[in-house]
Length: 198
Image 1 (cartoon, helix red, strand yellow):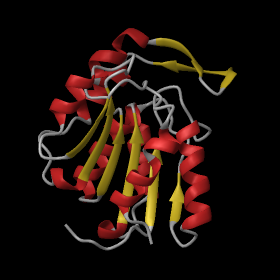
Image 2 (cartoon, rainbow, N blue to C red):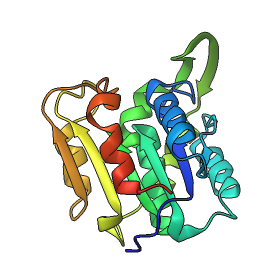
Image 3 (tube, rainbow, N blue to C red):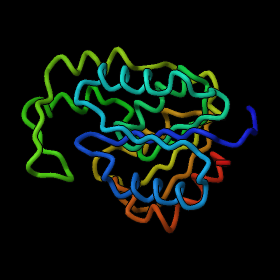
């Protein structure tokens, strides 16, 4: 693994979330303040997993693989795992979804965005197959992955998350919640230290 500092950083939000999520905004503010030379991108991901990965892949096409990093939360952690495997870059996963095709099957239908109740989208049945198509097997470079996993996650099973990333650095947190509400005080510095941004 290269120790080159990160020059490009991608943040991928979770299901029904947006670039307005607390963790995304905290990271954006910190990077802008402390690492002004780092290129930051946190796109609004479309509901279609296939379209989301196509958007991200096109957006990072010119990024240097060994000095880019990705941070993903929940479903964004699943996407980040796919991107990390495709590029070989470093990845930080925050309560990552491990089996989204299984878990989101019950969410087919009209959905409301977390950060704007007036915004709706339709989660289509074919999106489940798109999620399945994005699954990757054991990671080629598990040492390039750092997962922060809360035992108190009310949405995902922390044991499944921990078991998904053998050989990776894991921070298993007692208590906390799916949103990692203590992210700024307890985890942000550690996340950035792993990425070592320029």
